[in-house]
Length: 423
Image (tube, rainbow, N blue to C red; front, top):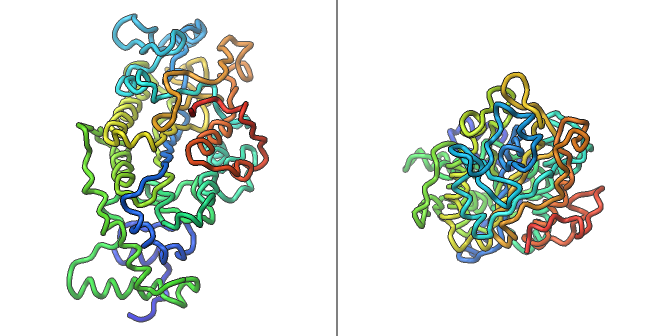
């Protein structure tokens, strides 16, 4: 098979291949992929972004139990104050408590490696999931014309120094908006299925020839090396075999998509292929009905998140000194519960920063209060920390990015506006 008129996506489907996503980008970087193989054994800083897609209720994830309004407005779904029995919040600092289902990460707080920023969010007032997610991932709230994502812009920083296709990786079926752009990024549905799967012998030879023809010369017009070299680059994960890195130090990941994604994130990081930004989605936070307190929808989602984050930290062990995990969500929920025992779309929420140089054991950000006159539009927790200031602090002080204006265009970034999560 010397010529192929099919496009890459069609070829992947027709050939029975596992997902190989270039995010709509050219495959030029594949010819340089051997660089990453030469870097095996080296370690750099890694940012793991966990997007709680659907708007997590930050008020019950990190409970402002000192606020009477929290209890008067949530008679059915409030998390009880610390020390009041089963299902009570876990005290953090005398003002805030952790949802009881997040107990697995409480030791990280105690050890000073987990920080929380409360009342963080977007300056844009939209309550549309689609728009708010788009703004958070593009890094330009209120501007719909931005074509690339803030994480892709971060990848362009120092790109010439680390030419590996694994700098930006998302675990999922598609590349998230945050990683769209001109810098190479991959979406991987499953490490075990990544790349080419074919039987041995003649069938494999035909598939190999088809793949090489697809990526050769006229089919793309921008290949910098031979088709054989490009094909070899796509095989890097198979050669490195990240899945051989089984959980260490007694780590036990919970069953479910998020637990599996965090397991594979750890496997990739331990393989030392040059990953700098890893993106993981975890959905199910749009709790309009039957949200629950220590039981119910929210509790179930937090159980998986708490277990997976704790397992990830345990698994990586001392390597967590080089890794920061940042949780984010497009907005929070209303202060008051609704008539269906749930909460509606709100404004500010809580975000967590774990590992690396995090200045943990503190709830950061200016707390605006929950009295009606203190709320945004009389109904929501007000935003006092722009999410761009939090993201920029981590990008600067963990990843070493200096061109922050390019990272968040249109936003004036001042170190004094950073919430202070990084040491």
